[in-house]
Image 1 (cartoon, helix red, strand yellow):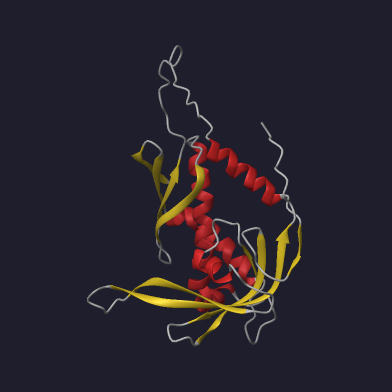
Image 2 (cartoon, rainbow, N blue to C red; image 1 turned 45 degrees about the vertical axis):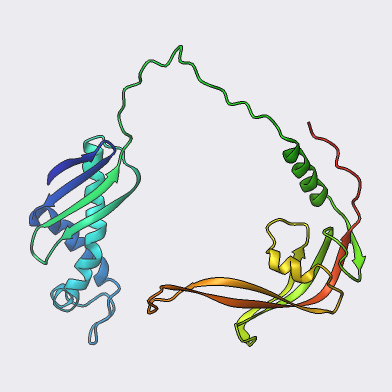
Length: 256
């Protein structure tokens, strides 16, 4: 076995392994014996077909299947002999093999980089100090109130402390239904900042059973268009099924 270990950078290596035909023969023959026990050829009992016939009919397939396992075995042996400890998963980047010829392959892998520890004692580190703003406190209180809120049924939306359960159907620019773009039972939190503003605007006065339309502009990339991009109008039809109102009105207790 001829082995060359090439350094790509401080943490990456590539090992090249070349095996002679004599080194490969015992493992190739073992692969044939293993395959011969399960191969069925007409005119012979299972596992009783002549090895020469199996080689002629299935030799290329059997050796191709076996060569990956053989390469892995020789790779493990090579790095163990050289006390190399790869980290991560080694990657086979090149493998050359033909029947009755030597095998050569390359494997890339990472190792722990070596570095020199510089003097660190006595170093001064600037500690960041964050001054809490009133807006941050208010936002945290709002978040806690929302997380621990309880809700009661309502017939209409009357502010931001409401959740609307609705079925939403996406419509195209002409108002036609877009197939497979319907979401049933969507919960729209009117107090949630991440909720699309167009949806909240459409449902700000929603009543149970009502149907409302939210419109918004989207930008679409046009490959064949000289301008490249164009704006289009999209709509969402919202059918309100249930409205709930938050009953948590007391201020959240401070956690600081």
